[in-house]
Amino acid sequence: GQVLSVGAKPKVINLLPASGSVMIESSALAKAVIVDKDNKYFSLEESITFSQPIINNEITPDSSIFANLSVVDTSNIQATEHHISFDITISVALFLVLDQNIKTVQNVGEDCFQRTSSIAYSNLISYTDDSFELTNEVELPANIGAVVQVQSDTLLQNVDTGEGILSLSGKIINNLIYLTNEDNPRLKTQKYTINFTQEISAPDVTSMAILQDCGTSYEVQGELSSVKGVLLLKNEYKVLSFINRVQSADVVCDAFSPKYQLLPTNKSYTIQKSC
Image 1 (cartoon, rainbow, N blue to C red):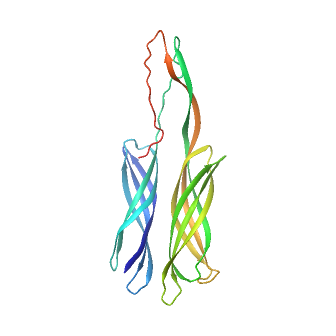
Image 2: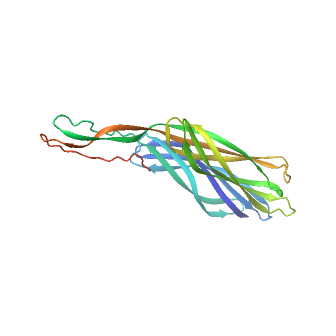
């Protein structure tokens, strides 16, 4: 047989933080389309599980950690009469919430001259974890004989925040792989690009949102090879949003004393880190 296409859809099952590392337990739905020696086409799907440790010295057993997985590449495809194998390269985006106390001087004291300045900072107060499903109907090709497979990718293009609302917008790109209804069926593809907008509740200011594609299911409605045939597509998602609140504080930025010797110290802080 011959392998015509392969793909995979990974998702995080569990995160196990420890001192200096986190173990990411994940699964992936692997898909393949093949044609055998008799020129018959088949769709194969199999769920696989895997674990991967990520090392970072700032991770503790009590850390709040979030991860998102995406497929970068599929390669090294090998096929025998009864077995197919291929390598999947997966990118891991890891988000670590750090707690850090920042000390500032608000008043130097007597016999000192000082200059103060107001600084604004964004403080993470909470995060929300929501899920939603998008359902769309698309018209099937007129010459379709059988659905072989549906592959889907999602592109998040914009995140807008309003009063208690987080609005996500982007595109869903669905690729339908099908056989024609001819005496000698041919394998063809049809692309459906669907724009979407989804609103979810998000109090205060959302600084960042992570959209995870959890998979696509489909159902054929009506008759194939007819104008009544439609494909019902269901895309499932999880969205993680980080809720920030902008605050301000008056701090001493310069000081002088004719009576005392002052030893000022400065320190800078990084408020966002990637592992």
